[in-house]
Length: 111
Image: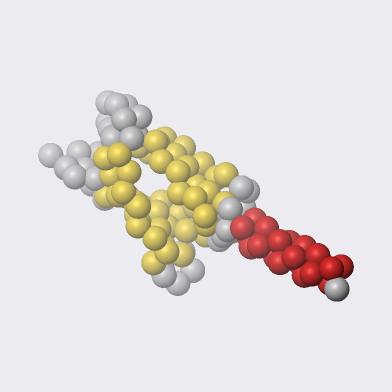
């Protein structure tokens, strides 16, 4: 009886760890302005590239302009970046590895 409970517990633990591993991918990068100064406050919407399905919206406030979007399963995504007084910026990125970088994104002022 005890052996069966231990086996069930191990199976549940394995399934839980496997599920967390599936969605444990991320996209990261940095936003700067035309003078290469960090853009500290911005919003990123994430969409699946294939069918344009909304995945999540995140607001960032980072003095270095850095961001990381966690808990994404491997897929191809569109990141739509919105910042007040800057043009809207979109980039497509496919997640193949655990941590994918979009690098440094240079935004243009709207004036």
